[in-house]
Image (cartoon, rainbow, N blue to C red; front, side, top):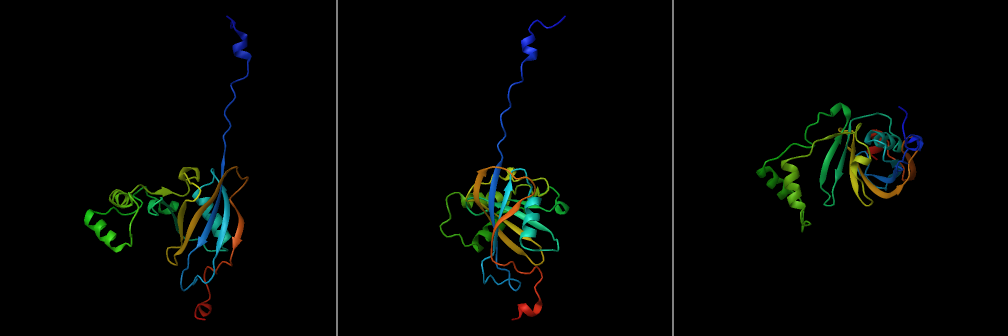
Length: 207
């Protein structure tokens, strides 16, 4: 039997809400790393990246932005408003789904707090630190973690460590958050300072 209300079957489907992408401007600041880089000059790169890219994509962009050529292991660490780590994101080959850092007992946490310089810590910082050290969040996989997953906010920051032997450390600041997206991979949009060689000449380090 044919349908009695052809209009219900012929009309256009309800319009879907548009999906708005978010475009981030990240400033990647290189920390001093003696004897490879004494920090005698400020070196940073600004990178555009959107929600759909992964932390692995961000690593590749930083790798190229600082003129590196030899790949190594690396890790990203997100931080909260107390400048305390909230989660570690590791290289796919290192990912096991375990804790972001080794859990600690109360005595170990007390000793660590005694060694830290936290003068007049913000309310909630010590409590958060104790909870996070006693029961660490699970580590993330950089290949599976998108920028959207991180809930980045303007003014926030995270950290990036490249090469666990030479320890190139970087602070990543979220400078701008806007509607938008990219076609293709993340890209460098601004730079400051000459990047140091990944493997400086030993004679240059002795000068």
